Image (cartoon, rainbow, N blue to C red; front, side):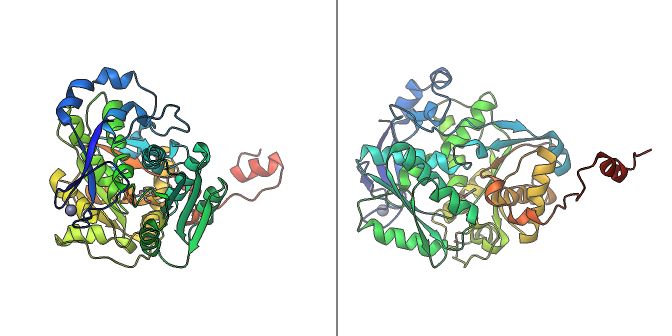
Length: 406
Ligand SMILES: Cc1ncc(COP(=O)(O)O)c(C=O)c1O
Ligand SMILES: [Zn+2]
């Protein structure tokens, strides 16, 4: 068991490794505590390379042990160079971290795999969550693979693709009349009443740690090196902050020497409380979301202030991306790199372009852009951008249209 306890980020009270969620003394968030000296002695590039081709190769740096039998294991997703897009955007090198390659096509499979492993350790039988869509997909599929029950709470106006991609696994979907933030409040209340494994409430300390594996993989896939910047989307702020922590921890155990990359974050302008707090150098003030990027529509982000601190400590930045640019950015990613990312990816690419426009990143920089979810789940913003050629099933008709009929 690599983690030793949970510790409150605000008042430092320590707790046993249970499903507590928040500090009972001050309601602060709880983080796992590790013995870094022991880990530095026992974890090496070689032990990792000898591990499974999934997030579980990094099990010693996670708060749970690897499953005896890894079912539907996420991680070790491709990191691919995107030269045409790098040129178009104006950076020296650009890699895409394709988390669309996970079992349910988003990075959420990583966090759910870690939380589910803890749920099993604690003997809990129902996986549950509040979700903006991708988390619901991941919880439902994980429960199906593990033979557990699943109950998910989503805003009723979610993209139909995300509802189907949850329901098909046999999960119970509660389509809540309200926003994601209403769903979140509901699950916090229910977590006191039901013996369920709420992955992003009682198990949040474990769940969040799953996102560190994005950083671990980027470093390993670059030959235990780091890029100059990593660009990622922000909803609750957990993924973004944990990527930075992942690099910090690799350095702590001696797996890398380099400084943590600058973390550039993106939010959709219609739900940008973290970008606003970064710009104003203030604490996050909740907003009511109104955005096409539903997966990022969290108006009261649990780790928003932490994300702002991450931007500051890494020399990064967090930008709001204009709503009208999200669809065109999805199209740019697709037609310059061959990758169909979801609305969150349109936001992420928008944040990268903003960083270049402001001179924060440029022709010297080697950048990784995290594609956290799949465009097939959110086709709406690009479906109107393309017009097929309406044609008879006749070769001459095609040749005539091409102007090559002689
Ligand atoms: C595709 C996608 N990217 C990014 C995020 C942001 O994650 P976090 O809540 O950790 O900031 C989400 C959250 O739902 C998501 O679905
Ligand atoms: Zn506390």
